[in-house]
Amino acid sequence: MQLRYNYRVYPDGSQCTALAQAFGCARVVWNDCLRERKQVHAAGLPYVTSAELSRVYITQAKRTTERGWLTGVSAVVLQQSLRDLDTAYKNFFDSTKGKRKGPKVAPPRYKSKKDTRQSIRLNTNTNAFCLNDDGTVYVAKVGDLKVTWSRPLPAAPTSLTLTKDSSGRYFASFVVDTEPDILPELDAEVGIDLGLTTFAVLSNGTRIRSPKFLRRAEKKLKRLRKDLSRKAKASKNRARARIKVARQHARVADRRRGFHHKASTRIIRDNQAVYVEDLAVSGLGRARLAKSVHDAGWSTFVSMLEYKAAKHGRYFGKIGRFEPTSQVCSVCGLKDGPKPLHVREWTCKECGTVHDRDDNASKNTLAAGRADRLNASQSAGKTRAKVPAQRVEAGSHPDGPTTVAGIPGLQAGSTSNDVCSPSPSRNEEDI
Image (cartoon, rainbow, N blue to C red):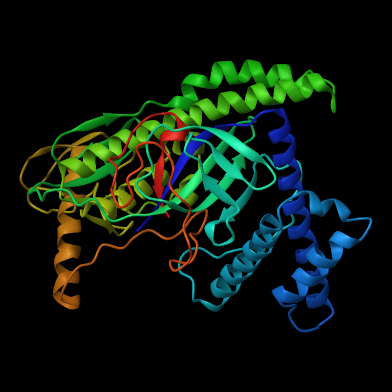
């Protein structure tokens, strides 16, 4: 399986300039090729191939006066930008034809230099980057980048993505092919009911409180946004105020991500099977409780449970979002009907059991998940854990060459345990 390891990068002044140039050149190639394909489509002409776009907007463009500055960056960055555009078009076509599962994918859009996130991607097939023995990462036409290694890589990486976020921080994301780290089997299984007041209630009685990181930071964010609104547009003071707001939002996101990692790792390690409800988060995010829903981050938490279950050999299952987990008595099975959100306890009319709303829902989630798993195993013969689909970046071809692993402590073929920390440089996600 492929995992992504993120690390904080600290480029110097000249390297920041080189990275900014690389970000800009990759963006220009993307926009030029996208514009050409849109114009050809509007004229009713055949689809332009990638080879033709590469010849015109990369090779020939370097010889012109308008695009001569493209020679200042590695050609690998430009070619990879074109390949990423092809991937975006393929995802769009597969989505319209029904070949791609999940929500509909929109067609590719133009990139702006004002986007809060800038990135470039490199793979090992072109030797555009390598790991040095002193712990730095060499990137073509950028130099040796200083990296904070919060953990050793389990194997030699197959691709590298350099990213600059809205707060001005730089990150290096390595894609690594590694074997699953199978944990010893357990008898425990758990159903999870996600909420807002209490983040998660487990069927074994465990309750995970909701930290509400955004709510706790709202007072400071309000002051920073007020300072930003008072600055003159296009001024240096406004740019500095914008970075302060972005950094505060980054702290909130980092703390939330660290909390999700710690909670999901603990649940996966303590249970052989985990069942959750398939919530319509995108719909709930547009309702009255939208801010609280986004602050909870249910989708990210469920995604972490899914990929960590696949990594550690656990079973992960989702029950239907229309299962009446809050309406059915977990003791006798009586369906007592819908209840408003302010009703936190209710008494079963059949057996007289007094239920806590969240505890009862988690037990019903466990029962429904076990039933779905049993039905699936009987119909398919066996149950296979699905590895989550790629979300951000793709690895290079498995037959391609790999970089020389020169990081102290790197052991090729070994696996590393999850490190749950609020710092984004210690996050690990499946692709």
